Length: 279
View (cartoon, rainbow, N blue to C red):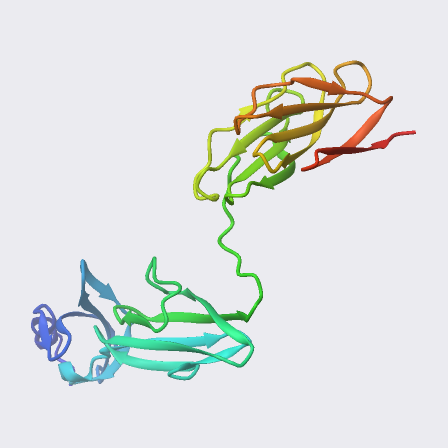
């Protein structure tokens, strides 16, 4: 027969189970016949105790009957497998588990996602410490195929940033222009990076007039000069405007090209300006 007094005395103490250390348990409820008990346990991990889902055990039970393992679920994308193979596994609490990505012919390992330690997404093999239930996914990509980094946000407009264009110099540094309606009407903005896109300068506003400035394009020539064109309505109709920089930065309009009513300008490193005539 289930003796609650004995049980309370039993569970109020911290149990010590070999290989996992301290465990705390408490009784959530017992069956009407008091022959089984629902027990919640907390396994001691770094920073405190990690709770587990309640388990039902027959009474009496011993500490060694408590669930003392965590599960690891391994999945893969097309292009390879893993060692251990994809599937579900149970490991003792605190165990260090090594998982290796194995790419098929024509593929290469890309990264891990899921319950992966930060900064170790591209480790191969990867080592996981079983301090909770974990699920990981192994990703592969075709060999010779471009591998993309994580998308980086470079604008924080409350009114929308549109029509971006990008150019890259001979050192791999990118320059970006776009239009934004933050000031109340569309204006042209510019940013650059001097470390290959890892960090960016503050956005610089290139235009400032009461009319719309839209559809910018940018190019870098062989001397490192920047060339930007865009469409502007400042004269009362849509015209094409152009600015050049010889110092890797932009300081406002320097020149104007006009040919009737124009839109959708584009520029290439020549520099060669092209546009569409609106009829």
